[in-house]
Length: 394
Image (cartoon, rainbow, N blue to C red):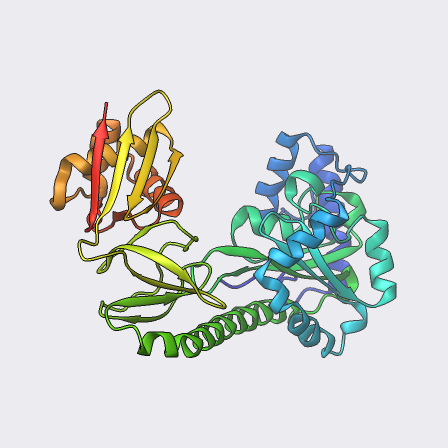
């Protein structure tokens, strides 16, 4: 999806920006606007009014502490690409008027880059690192609205809900994890309203696509290094095995059909791997070697259906226990009763809710269950994984 320019074809930028400011005054004041707000703007303003935000002053800003900001930066995959984004924006002829902003998926500003003059103007608006820049906090803006709409957004002058943001334009686009499609954050370019160029939106989108390509290359390079480091151990270890990184992304597999990902390994925690059965992960320098636990390759689960369901997991002399939600317990029981034939999403919906109308909820619940327990549940159809022995205690 491409960003729609905030400047209509053939329109003069200064006159259009003034017209948008008059539009804002008229619409929010109950008058007749000179132009109608774009649909994306109208919908966002309606959300702001329902939230009770104020348009004629700067709403209170929420910010995270410096320590939390540092943790968010370190934990964001975007820290690998933010320098490259800054270089691509800085190479443009209008860079002196541009502020590059990168947020996380919650709309917290993690990084800014720009000249001292443009950063000073942003400071006066509270447009700074650590600030929550979602619609609910600062009104209609390209970052927050891009998060709300899950799409690229460009806004100009009076299209912003807060009057304090009217001297600005902003053009924002979501950036996603190329491995999973998960939203990582928003890349935004902002600047003085009368410096908006029609190519800004394309520049932002290109930056996002380059960032996603760099994230994919970095991922592949890490897996290549992990595979090379594990080769000596694999050579002296016949039999099926998987080499995976900290998050379960597979760098190498032997003896089973290739797969992209397994459950994130943890020391001493058995997990079920399709094609291998019950496995125990062994620590490598930058990842894990995952091999079957023994000849039987069985993982034993004991599920106690008490007021707070308890699940015990055992494999050879290793094991762990944890409480799970009642919905997760009901899911395991339904799959246990279905046996190796398993259940489709519709059938599991009927087993859990009495009808087939909750397929989306079912898929989300199974996804959360697999994230919590590993690949103890197989998909297509949903079923207890091979090598897993589940016993239910009422």
